[in-house]
Image (cartoon, rainbow over all chains, first blue to last red):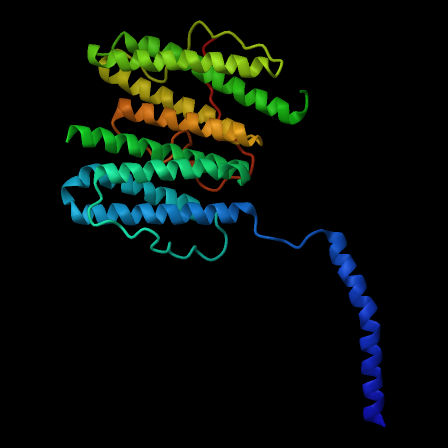
Length: 160
Length: 164
């Protein structure tokens, strides 16, 4: 008897819960769409992945050609600064290491590095539309830095 | 053509124009001290500044804004009495110009953003041609490269050290 009562009250409560749930759903709907990751997060993750890939290329090139140290070390340092600036804007778990999309080539010539820089600079410009204003400025500045890296590497290739 | 967003756009374009005019003046000073081998590069940059000015005047005109005339003189960031200082000045001016273009990148219009970013790239490439080195954040101060409140573009505004 007592068990039956309890079951009935549970059923009643469940029955009562249905309209409540329905109202709750409406209530959530009334508040707007559920929070989604801001566009900046996707843009940041892509930019972080590109920086990580470039850093890997420079480390590989330095290991293969220590004679390029004077040219490549300052550029590598600037990429590390880019990575730190991008990561500082990503609240939450750090980005997972970039998958070896392009395994660092054994011999990264200055020309190949310049081409990679130019491609990275162009890719960043295509990401600006959805970024917040301050992130867009950071991405554009990094893009300008990478375009200048490409120019520097080409200058040094032609003089070496 | 009179909303707050339009006013911000006009302000950003006017900042670029002011930086272009300041750079044109600066190249005039630098040119007098540059070695002959570097003068063609300075003349090329100066010609590009005039093309940029024409473009900006058109962009402002299409928004119903008359372009202000360039000032007669601008305060230089440091004394320029020799070739080394002249080369430094050319690199400095390009970085200031990049800073002005980054104001355009903070606007809402995606086409203007991309345009500003490409111009900032060109400034950084020209600065590297002069200085034979690169920087991590052309046009941004080190502080501005870190986290900043959204919309705080004041750190990268171009103030061309204009003298009255």
